[in-house]
Length: 134
Image (tube, rainbow, N blue to C red; front, side, top):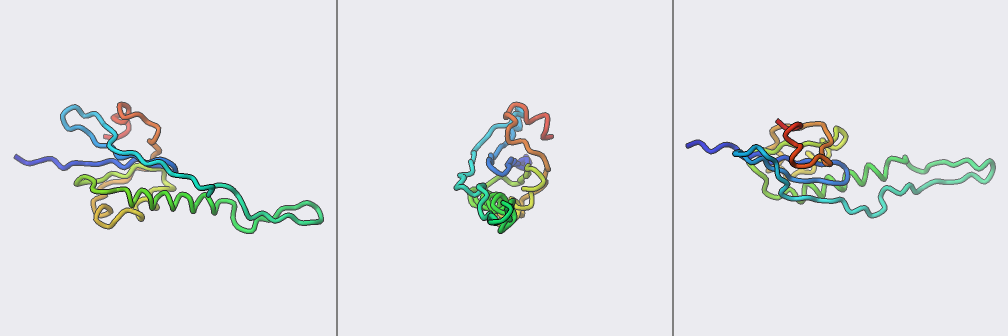
């Protein structure tokens, strides 16, 4: 008898990730593990300079730089926590995070990525995932 390939779904955004698998008999999804990003103040905008005449502000660096670094750090956390996933992996994340997460995965797991889906499904309950993931 041929054993079907086991597929893990890695559903993530910039702050939350969860590993989900589908039961082959019932077709229901269940969350195996979750990861929440620990914010260390990376989103706080710092680096503004005030001009003494006129009250104008000038940013020392891009205002989105801290958010981008926080997203990269969380993608690295996801990669480190990926562990031993199934035979195939489907990445589900907003388009802005897909590449960062895939690049942060260990090479052994990156090789098992069968599909990427550009959607934010982190807040979708397990019982509603059937509508989104075929």
